[in-house]
Every structure is written in C-alpha cells, then in structure tokens.
Amino acid sequence: MEKHAIFGGKVLPYALLAPQLAIILVFFYWPASQAVWQSFLQQDAFGLKSEFIGLANYAELLTSREYYRTLSTTLVFSTAVAGLSLGIALLLAVQADKQIRGAGVYRTLLIWPYAVAPAVAGVLWLFMFQPSLGMLARGLRTLGVDWNPLLNGNHAMTLVVLAATWKQISYNFLFFLAGLQAIPRSVYEAAAIDGAKPRRRFWTITFPLLSPTAFFLLVVNVVYVFFDTFGIIDTVTQGGPSKATETLVYKVYVDGKLGSDLGGSAAQSVILLVIVMALTAVQFKFIERKVTY
Image (cartoon, rainbow, N blue to C red; front, top):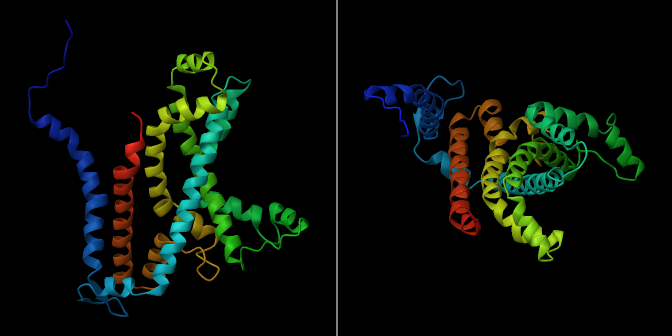
C-alpha cells in the first residue's frame, strides 16, 4: 500500500507560499504598478513635483520617429541574436551528444560562458574587437576590413550581436543537450535499420522530438534579448554610434536616468512589457501548434 503525507492544517500551504508571493509582490507587481502610474505623470525640471498628464507620454512616444527607429533596431537585434544563439547551440548540442572521446570536457567548456555576467561578456568582446588594441580587430584590418565599431553603426551592431549571442549559447546548449539525451536510442536504431541517413534522421526524429525544448528556448531567448542584453550594450557601445545600437530597454535607461524624463521612460517600459507579452502570446498561439509533445 502506497503511503501519502497528509497535512491536517489549512494554514501550512499558505504559509509555505507566503515568502514567494511576498517576493513577487515586492519586486514585480509593486514596481510594475509604480511604472504604470509614473507613465501618466510629468515631473518638473528639478524633480520636486509631478503633474498628471494622462496619455500624453504615450502619445508623444507613438508619434516619435526616433522611437520607431529604436523599435526597428531592437527587432533586428533580437532576431539576429535569437536565431544565431539557437542555431549554434543546437549544432553544438548535436555534436556533443555523439559518442566521442573527451565529450565531457567539451560539454563543460561550452557551459562556462553561462557563468559570465552580461557586462563582463561585453567587456571581453570589446577588448577583442577594440579598433586600435583588439587582436581580432587587427586581424580584420590585415584582411582589408576597416573595422571600427566606434564610428560605424553596422560594425557596432555586429559586435553587440556577437557578444549577446556568445553569452546565450551556453544556456541554450544545456537545454538542447538535455533534450537530445532524453530521446530513446532505439528510435535512431530503428531508423538506421530502415536506411535513413543522418540528415533525414535529424529532420524526421531529432528535431520533431526536440521541438518542445526549442519552443521553450525561443520564448526565453526573446525575453533575454529584450531585457537582459542591457549590460552588454551599455559596456560595449552605450547605444552608439549615433544610436545605431540603442534598443528599447537601453532607451528606457537613457531617457529616464540620463535624460531625467521619468514619465516618458516609464511609458517606454510599459510599452516594452506589452510588446514582449504580445510576442510571447503570438508564439504560444501560432508556433506551439507545430510542437510535438
């Protein structure tokens, strides 16, 4: 007979949930509500008083050509980082899942970058690609490439995309490798007996069975690109040159912290949250249909 643990009191479940609920309330719902309220206000130049102006901050943003430029920059940046990090991580996971000598060492080395903070990752890539001192920048110049992310917006965007991609590959690699190891080997053996080549086995067996993991990582990577890449952009380019690498989350910081436009910055944060929620909802509605559970 199977034994079950039974708790008689009704207070204990709520007591166990209370710490986590308190953390969510204090560090998420309270700041979010403050940002929403702040987006309806306008502060004076000295920050001594606030005035309720309704939707004026939102109207100003939605009619600003500069804001739409930042939005397009964010979409390009997020698409490049999510696509590259997922694709490279999947390729590395497939190779690491093979029976090769020293596979454990390879897996450990591929996981290490996940422990690096975003700001530190940005500094590492900045050192490598610094126009006058970076080793890789010197190599590019010997190949005839006039590399200068300090002046060229395309070069700066390439640099932050590479840094953000490198930082996220390890996270994706962990989940892809775990998903690959969960696929029964007997399925591959049966396909091999039927004469299926490695490429066909990947697209008919591996990828469909890995689709739940891929869908989860797609959602996580979208959130990562929109929010967690702030440290990389701040340490590498500060949104420059000429705001070529200024994303939505970095614009919130620039307008709020540096520009002292707290109302406009709060409105931007609310819009950013709505965009991420909408993208997540679209992914669950349309992409999840193709997931094989």
